[in-house]
Image (cartoon, rainbow over all chains, first blue to last red):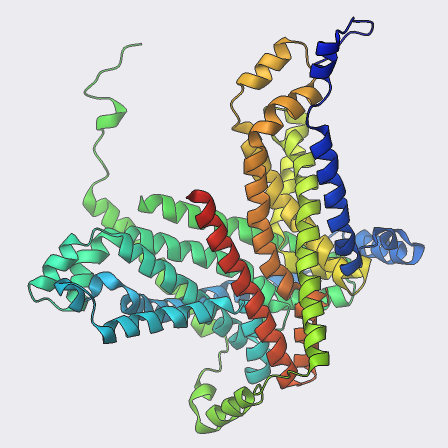
Amino acid sequence: MALEPGTLISPAHAAAVRDPAWRGRVAWMLLAALLLWPLLVLTEFRPWQLLQPRSLRVTAHFLAGFVPPASNRDFLALVARETWRTVAIATAGVSLALLLAAPLALLATAALSVSSLAGRMAVLPFAVRQAARALMVALRTVPELVWALLFVRVVGLGPTAGVLAIGLTYGGMLGKVFAEILESCDAHPTRTLLANGSGRLQAFAYGLLPQAAPELTSYAIYRWECAIRSSVVLGFVGAGGLGQQMDSSLKMLAGSEVATMLLVFIALVGLADAVSAWLRRSLR
Amino acid sequence: MSRDPVAGPMLRLPASVSALRVRNSWVLLAALALVVASFWSLDLHFSAFWSSEAIRAMSRFAAEFLPPDSSPAFVRKVVLAAGETLAMSALGTLLASMLGLLLALPAAYTHSRAVWRVPTRLLLNGLRAVPELVWASLMLIAAGLGPMAGTLALTLHTTGVLGRLFAEAIENTPPGPAFALRTQGAGPAQVFLYATLPQVAPQLLSYALYRWENNIRAASILGVVGAGGLGQMLAYHLGLFQMARTATVLLAMLALVLAVDATSYFARRAMTR
């Protein structure tokens, strides 16, 4: 509210113009500043270091290399090969994850329980379902980067570590979400099939799958898109692909190569995003 | 213009089943080809896993993790690194919320003209497209090893994410209060501060908290490239083959992630009830 200068203000009006909550606001501000201080100390946050001449010179030199991006033929061929490897690592990883997730999700789905048809689920099936859930929690709680670091130690540098890391972490995630999707389906057809003597796999194939198939596929495609992004990141710990190449160019401060690879990476992510959006739209 | 109710767009027949089947078969075939080509082109060494020698080597590797190093001095260092991780994520999210709000205004069509909107959206997309870990290794060049590089990396990526979410939230606010203030002659800043912001503040806060949750997870691994926190300790001790210490750091990491998950789960349940 803008008051013209020279407006007469009655005492009641003056009280209305003054912010009635100023005491609380000031107190919150002080508290926030008090909490912020240790954060700044712990993170060694000293932005002025960025502006020191030595650091500025290195940064400027590195950034100046960005234009023009590297475009000689050998390098572009290398980037194309590594980009394909990135996509291949993501695809192979998600395939492994699906192999892992499908049985785990079937094991964990309570709607496929025969014993629960007659009231409460029996003890052994309950224990098996909880064990499958716990395994999936364990798989997806460890970040894929940590899996990759550990596997690089076991199998050495290269795509195997990346594929295994994505397979394990995404297996846990896909399994959990698949089980949730199956649980959220209408359980009536499944229960009817089970009650009439069909096996669990038959009940799944004819009761649950027809309802859940679009959603299951859609989520798997979405995870493939995420896997492409994360397979670039995994390259930074030596799991092959575009990330590993980017890491070595960064270490050599080769700005033009980094610029090319960043552009390729952004284009790749955009492309994966578009493909996945198109596929998922056509499922509806 | 009158529309024929029978030939309206609502009543058009869906594509024929056989045409859909043909298209789906092609998509499925393409997906299968991609999977086969992926496995074929990567030199994967899975067969090495099943030899008895490999299994023995792996179990030896796993056995070295036990028992985790629990000497008080080392545990204190791990707790300090966990604190550093938390601080990085909190400061990164805080800075990103401020920057994100600053960029969300020109990015939201209700508060800006196209001249500003298009470049701001491009900037936000670029910030978001590059993952935190890649930002962190870029920041190492300017900021050197340590948690500041990680904090800046989190800030940059999260600014891109939050800026877009904030802009969408601002665009979706009911326009009534803003209109009322404008008709009274309030300037753009006053309209934003007294009409739009109070309406969207709860949503902005919940977005920021959600990103903080993500960032704690991200911050714990960012250090792998040298950007501070638990990740840096993990990479360091794993690099030196000090498996007992690696195990302690891994346990701390898992505890942090599980604690964040549990807190957010119970907070959500308490708030929705």
